Image (spheres, one colour):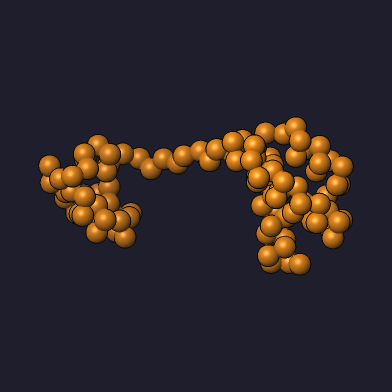
Length: 101
């Protein structure tokens, strides 16, 4: 197995070539050349622990200091919605505190 750095697949990603060269012959070619894919974050599991309380505190502060969201609706979503919706709300509150407040 030999990596061909002139391969068309790498033309759009020249910054990746050094890393690919480092694993040539170690990592199977089908893993190196497969399409890029993401992975899911286990947000439901994260919100079963202390992240739930931290998010609730952040969102209570956010709702108290802004008029952007209804506090009762936010509390309802935080208790009943799937993890991704809770994740989005928590990130909105943390972004606001970091960049606006």
